[in-house]
Length: 460
Image (cartoon, one colour):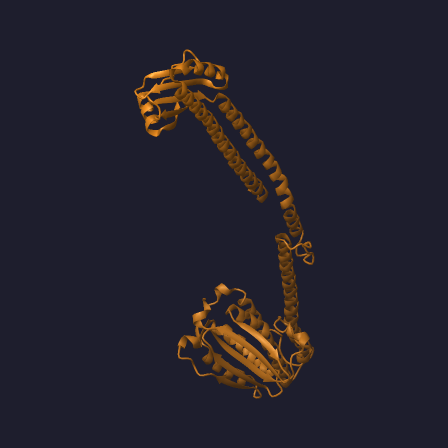
């Protein structure tokens, strides 16, 4: 069922329910008003008969008969009876001579007990009045059928029924028009989204100038398209750069081998060529490993996670980085371990965290004039914080927003060996471990801060 049909049905249902409730209320209060009005007429006639009979006694019978006959047309099936307390009739008038209307002894007793009593006899409304301040006491009963009132109620019921049906039909028609106008902007958005593909990701949805939900939906789609366009652009750059970086050592190897095979070489020349080829192969191997690590971070579900001591991992990284070059130095500073052992543990993959932290610390040594990285490990109740600091020229502002993109290298660092994958890999690894990595460059100091949740906070 489409939203348009749902809106139409809900709108029709709502209007129909309201019409039925209003019609029921009108009919209910009209019926009550009719009944009360008719009973007031019976009440008035009963009191008039009682006063006249009380005043004139038996001599009032002929006068009462004339009065009742004269206004008989105003009451259908009218009956006026006067009884003694023992049930003896003093006066009986029926509009129809064949009328078998009569009052039972139980009904007379009820009137005597209640003094004034409204009750129903067949299809007639009746009012009984007990007059006890006369000698002897007597009972007056006036009954009639409100035919005109019932016909009026029947007509009202028909009118309200027709009005409800007509209102239901009109509400459905209005619902169709209303839903069409309401869904029209959504249909336009759907059509615009369907027209967008990988070939025209730069196209955007018209958001309009309003602040309603549809404008916000359009803006959300546009934000999504912006991220998709950026993602596709990054992917294309990644593939282009990866192809270039992989082809460079292969081209170098091929060129060296072709030149070498052009003529006979000495053993020393062959050795130099093989060493150069070995260096290119190692470079390509390192690049391939980095690309595989980045690919691995894209599948979080396949990564095995365990509890790790971050201080022990940093000790291994310190030893590994200092072996890369005699110039590299790593100064590791670890705060006092917390009493709660869980606060010193992280939940993660040892190999990936090793690679991420090693890349950041190695970069600190590589790009510092003194080739020294200062590493500080601090503990808190919810997270572990690793600060990697080095001295040197700060990172340019124009480069800051790109340093975590794959294959991005600043113009200042082109003379250094590398592929521009270290920080991108570190950022992805820290992200899948629910951590953060931030950068801050001061006058003569650069700081990379890595925060990781402790074991107790990882799943919360």
